[in-house]
Length: 133
Image (cartoon, rainbow, N blue to C red; front, side, top):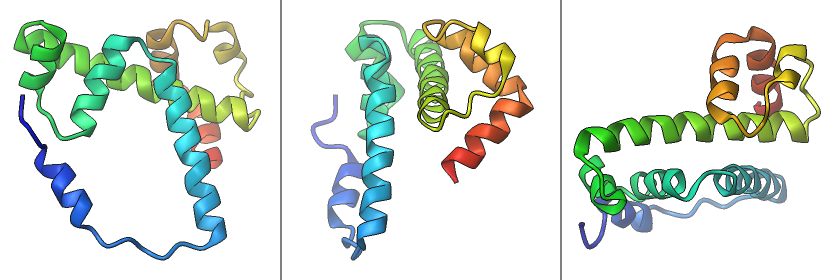
């Protein structure tokens, strides 16, 4: 594995913008949503997502998970889908925006089924977008 991801060094050199109380509150809420979504992932998914977020590549994910390169690409793709589904579920649950009767029937623990539904349902997509923006 690399000793220090290039994106982390770039991030550390970025200027810190002056944020007002509303922006800080929105940021804190977003951080809470992401933390909740990541906390709901398996250790394997969280590891894959975390490594890539820190600037590591698929080869590093493969090494960390002790799997082949191709399997790491698949694992990362699925982890991203599950994270997106979990995040949208968090948003919809916090905003009580789950107006979709079909989504209510999908078990929250089956994140791939939730992801498939969210990708194909305009009601859920509209509700999530309005809750996020």
